[in-house]
Image (cartoon, rainbow, N blue to C red; front, side, top):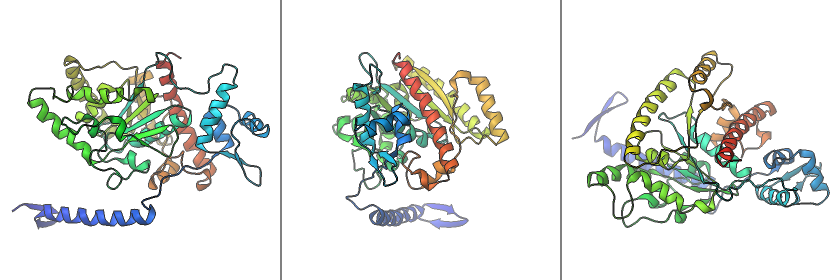
Length: 402
């Protein structure tokens, strides 16, 4: 009989206990979801105030207000007090209008000509480093600033999917994750068939769930059988091939990798043009990152010898959950900058009540309204996010030769 010690008590048939508790929890979660989110409900997106819209469009608030007063471009919603706001769809329309009437200035940042698809793998060996928060905000910021974005949830925990309104247990069925496009058998599907629209215009997502773990289990078996399967090349090329099939539809792909160096993460890095490593500036987290880098270097060297593509446009470290008033954290950031120099992003992601509170309801700072927080708290969080994402956007454009 299987025996396990839990919470100080000896429990026989622990497997049955865990299964029963899982079923009970699943039923309760499903009931809660039905109450909060009926089957026909879809996640919506708030209006953006004129100043926010102007910031995303890259124009002044005064210029945008004048366009509104002159009846040019999509017309905003106007309250009785005269406050103007735009929907995310209107931002896209206004961007197109500005491009058409901007005397040669570019307002639509989509890649053109020989500019290659940017594939950004967001990675870390340790959970709690802000990896999913970073991925979600980066993908949404890129969409709001006019890029065509595909977010890929490669983490079996699927938090990125939940943030965008897809509950992994209820909304993502069998063979509807990235696994469907990279699996080794006859059930493999084109990636285009599992891509879904989000509440952000210009942002699509490949959702995830526990099914992704099948790739971690299948790959060693395929390798042991002697390499490539009849249904595709060796594991590290499969994700790259899947993304190539939809490359013409997007400017940037952002991949939320699982918090371990498994076959999924290695596939993402091999298919990436850029790697973003998130790190919380605490000693234990930096020590964990050190181990991750050592392992990553050895693994990538092995894959390179097997024909993997290790060419990156850029690699950066992003300091996350940073409290500038915390002396040890500030020292750790200085230590990282002295070692990695320009490879550490100039802008850190600050620790913020606004960001953490938004996450409690599966939202980002771009989704919540400013009125839900004190002005200083919200503005500080937004300034931090825009700083980080703007710096990454500059790296993307530089890789395109702009």
